[in-house]
Length: 313
Image 1 (cartoon, rainbow, N blue to C red):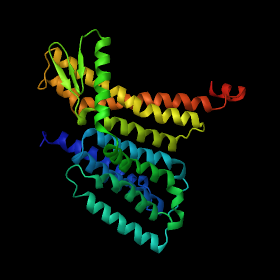
Image 2: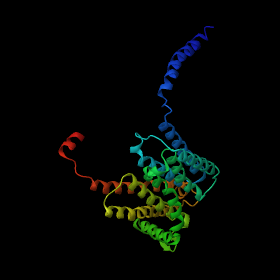
Image 3: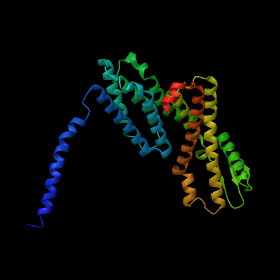
Image 4: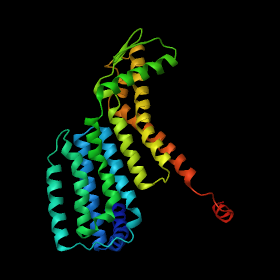
């Protein structure tokens, strides 16, 4: 009995703490207003779409889908506080039917399917119809355009020419290797070094990275627009160039791995060749593009007035 007394005392102490905590929780749960219910539905739809990307696509596509949904959220961030869903009966029925169809079709995607990329903007339209009348869809223009970057990415992957990009990537990778002092020879897709080499195939030529950075450029322009046409042109031209440069550095590292004795079965080669290493360079490409974008955006901002400058300090 004496042995169990401390245990009973602990249970009683936890009970006294737990009961007040449980009583406080209902007050912390947001009320079931139309706005909160719409936000909950939107969060569930986005989470389900991202989960399907995670289970059926590579890591690059999953991170890009996350970036697109995040861009859609940023584009409508200033509307969240004043959001008051008031759909008509027609838009409510259309939105519900579309949402059910999208969720059902998305749930059966098991591998690369172009339809998955197209379902995201359809889900966005369905969510918009649950919030406004059909004539009010213009309010969600920027978020819907952001979601359109997913099918745009899939389209770019099919439209952009594979062979010229592969040949340019091989040449650029050979250039980086030469800068490091390693003799190499580039013949078409092949980069040959003294003790190794690689071949730039379509899956490794950086086409996906170039397409992603182009779509990221559109999302940035929607979320944080720049006014200058010259800046827009610079951004659209630099986006695929940055993706191409970053991927060519990755290919150069792969070639150097083979020269150092780390062949295709080595952990180092696999890291830079498969999703993990490719994701690192995609992150670097987005970071470089983001830095360039912020630099151009800051040039358009008016200088701080003396009073504003003193307030910030």
